[in-house]
Image (cartoon, helix red, strand yellow):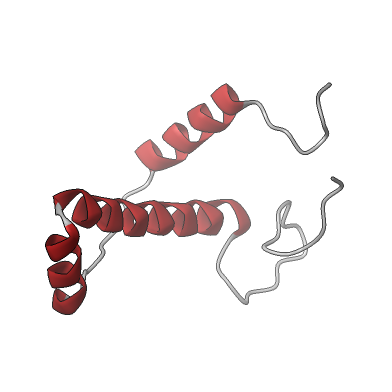
Length: 88
């Protein structure tokens, strides 16, 4: 049984790829040295996980900005918003 909040993963991935290829934006992230040291002491996998998590968060923030527009700017004809409710 398919719920209304489930999306087509293939079309979502294609849409993200299309947006990313058309963009000239750059994603940057910085890991504070104490955080890097703590992660390395726990193991290189922990450092890789910390870096990947931050990159994934930046990519999601970028995608929301592309789909919903700049934060705190009203736009009457906007199709998507950053807030709201969903069924399910």
